[in-house]
Image (cartoon, rainbow over all chains, first blue to last red; front, side, top):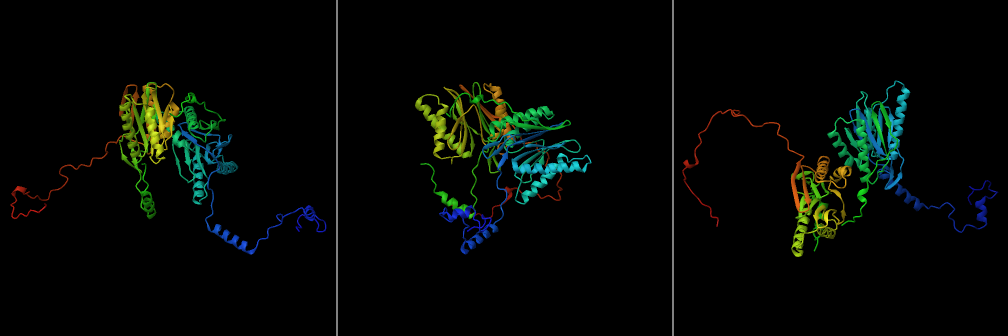
Length: 276
Length: 262
């Protein structure tokens, strides 16, 4: 009989009383008697799994969709919606995928949200370290982009990637606006306009055309352009939400806006037309 | 009737031996259609790709179905070509039989029933547009046989780039010039941002009683001027000695033997 429940061997616990009363019809409550044959089989099964390569991150779970960025002469504008999708379920509708790292940088994360939170934690610690050193110099956008590239490439080389694409928007030490992109496989570059995920198919053509037509865009024009792109993304990306934040680094200001929505036009759906 | 699958076993065996099967030539395309106040405008790029090589720089993707109906095709080039040709023949026969101008929904039905019969193996994604007695009509047809009735549509690998232009700029009741502009902008977005699309913008404007084809409407990818000049000036090669050329007629025939060929 199990001595675990009894405080004193001479004083029966509930278990013993129930057993004495004959309330147990099976021995399911007792530990399983494993014979040697089964233990040998367990050993070989564990050997088989141990001899296979150890599997790491296989797929993202809670994900964020497109992040957009555009660089103007006066600064950089970055935008992302506030949705954390759980597969096809719009599960977390108030998630901030933009993070202000320090006064010169904002990052936006696409892909697995847990991995993005890990990156945010590490970057936060970096900013605290910069503050603690106390020389008034904080890492700029270029340094943070470089650091992220090293981290993400290193993780992919260990076959355990951080399943994210990060957009780094900010200013370099000289004050020049900077816009960078880093991938989960370590692809990294800087450009005048960047977009992740669906945004690279739908929004990037719009951003490129706007830059071509108006090379001297102001930050306000860039913000309006972002709203137009996010509206089209809401029309055409299944995993998007019409609630987004726009971050600006430039003109002495580094801030992320409150969540806003774009007005949408669904009037083409007014007349029922069928398929023929 | 239908496909004969006899060669599938042979192909599977060859693939297992390591023989690489030839890839179908695809149009890797941007095709669009939009309804405006007087009719329909269809637009397409002109690049045909075979793998990552441009097979045809200026192919025609807007196919004739009837005098008042045209169809853009994306997917496998052979499939779109033969499917649209077949439906064009059937529409002509129908016109002769009924004595009436063809309707867009007739060609739509023929296309859908054909493509569904082949369960998606005929890889043709089409944008069908025209003006008939019922007014302007625009439909998209997918390889498995489904269709959509829409005021504006894009298909092909550049469809997302083109759709971003439409979603941003389309409004009900466009006039011809505005509609031509957004079609041109949409195809241009596909040509510039999609690697499977390129070269020129072709446009077909279909109105009641008139069809105007612009081929090309605009040349986006122009071959640039050659930068260097590789011709050598006369006198570059030093002449060390010269030989007097003997004319052929000066040769004397000494012996002649003719081969028997019959």
